[in-house]
Amino acid sequence: KQTYEIAVFPGDGIGPEVIDATLTVLQACQERYGLSLNYTTHDFSAELYRRTGKKITAADMDEIGEQADAVLFGAMGLPEVRGPEGLELGAQVEMRAHYGLLASLRPVRLFDGVEGPLKDENVDMLVIREISEGMFAGLADKHEPSDETATDRMTITRATCEKLFDVAFSQARARRKRGTPGRVTLLHKSNALRSNVLMEKVFDEVAAKNKDVDSQKFYIDVGSMYMVTDPQRYDVIVSENIFGDITSEIAAGLGGGLGIAPSADVSLTHGVFQPSHGSAPDIAGQGIANPIAMILSAAMMLEWLGEQHDDDRCTDVAQRIQAAVETVLANGPWAKDLGGDAGTQEVADAVTAALAGK
Ligand code: NAD
Image (cartoon, rainbow, N blue to C red; front, side, top):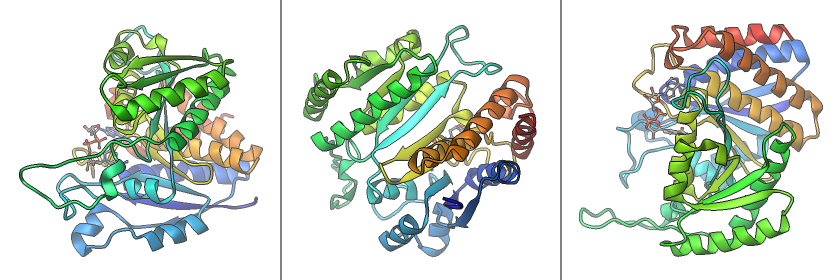
């Protein structure tokens, strides 16, 4: 395939800032390594909804899904902009349902040059968050707002678990090639939640079919503690939607913070690539957001395109970007969240310059 079509959603707050910076890095890759990407920008955002009432529709997502090879997403949502049910607007949640996205892959590694809260620990884990059901399963339910009672629903299906755990074991196998132990851990709550009893049962079945990869299980409560007290226990962590939402941010914290934590929401056919962070209204408009989470998410997109289309060129550029990010994290300049004073574009320019060394 010659040119990949990328749907770009800058979104709200720092979303457009980190997207703009990331596109300059991709532009350099296009010029140097013969990569060809064509962008279509979509202006959906909480801010657009506030001004015009316009939000993404199923027809929009059909058209985008048809036309684009991947979605590159900044961040969406503003705490004060709410829909009729009192929930925030965020096209990322609607895209998960519409495209049948199943797993959010959130790799975290404590890079040289970055100080995490556990100074001497080697943190290297991949949190895989289930994103199609779990505690978010009831989002599409009919709901009359009430001041007295409100209910959410946690539902887990065998079909989703089987696909999710297949992803987890194959990711553990792929990571093992670069020296990780190859171990999948289920974090769950089968002592108290029916849905998690089924999840654990399916996990055991899938683990039995993947005996070449170690597996273990912890209750989510003690498992969260181990993430902080003994992160070496973990390689790939897999978890239900809300548990994964929380554990992936614990992991991000261990790896030096949200500013450098990428993510990829994928199905077999669709992928949405976005930083783990949100729109960060507290620092928006100042040009100080760290673009590295977004840049690494773009590298995950290229890696995924490479696998989908059997295109080594994409995989090669993904690796170049990852290596350039490692160089910048080790030597600076660092953005404010990592203790430096470099602005968003300055960090992106340093990544581009580090690419040039390759
Ligand atoms: P957040 O991730 O936006 O910010 C949390 C903290 O991390 C803030 O102090 C912020 O300044 C800091 N931070 C985040 N990204 C950073 C970066 N790149 N560089 C430096 N510092 C960074 O989370 P929040 O404040 O809880 O949420 C803000 C809004 O974002 C909410 O409306 C929320 O719903 C939305 N949100 C969107 C997504 C998404 O688009 N996928 C994800 C999470 C939150």
